[in-house]
Image (cartoon, rainbow, N blue to C red; front, top):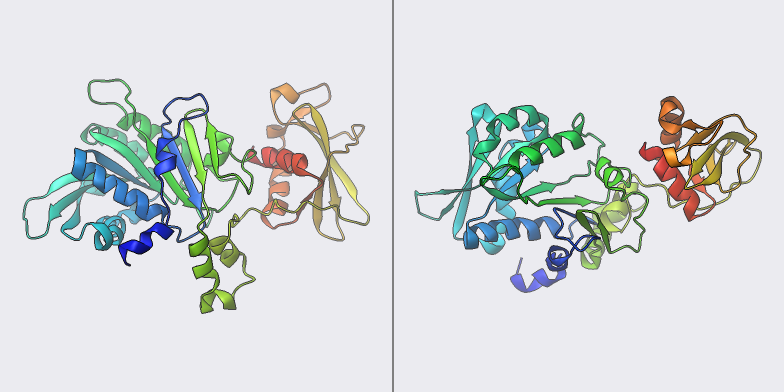
Length: 355
């Protein structure tokens, strides 16, 4: 790829300059986009350049231990051919493969330097024992934080928090600033990180940047990457497949919440959900196989659910007490069988399923 063509790919300069919703320097940077937009290339290059220019080491985060195989090639080969042709990267297993040192060297030079580390979240408990060996890292990178197969590590969010807390100790401080950069294609609004950060209910298709407490998010869309994917002969053959739409367009692979529509025919009332001090009705249209959320509710129906303690009223129960019912709703959601009367109804269901 010629360097003059790099201008058509992702540039994270604005994201790096952003402040959070309170005007503070964020510690979490999230970047999502359609596939092949160039976000991984940008941040891999950024991390290597920060080491070469300032000696700032980094930590690469993966979910599972097997992903650490050939880690140096996975991370470095793409940017080496474009920006770092004079350098090589190798990886050295440490602590029986619990983590890896990443070693950077110049071509023909037998001497190498540790530029970073690679860890797996499912080894979080063991990593804590060796965190003092990695607490000279200045930033963390978690690529593909949304799983396309919905295969997350057990208690993944807690493990990420645990690892970050352990590595943020160092330099004589109980806690130091250690930013984490989280990159992903658009997969699902209900991924555990969006849910925990409250992004799921705030993100819209036309959102480009979003600020929260301690985090900033960029939702990018690369038109040239979209066109290249959409016009390939292979993808044209499968143009109606959900994956091709997700890969080439600004859409979420598992997000079927865009269906604002009012189904026709006979319906059965399922429950009332109270959200932001307003009641919403959930109906089943059995003949169409559709679950519908409306802003018109039958409050005389016995099953009434509250999403938060602020929504709780007499004769309402907290939503987390109805796991089986919510799991059934989630099944309809995941299979694209939800319809919504309006955007607020959509937000209500997203919040409900987030629990």
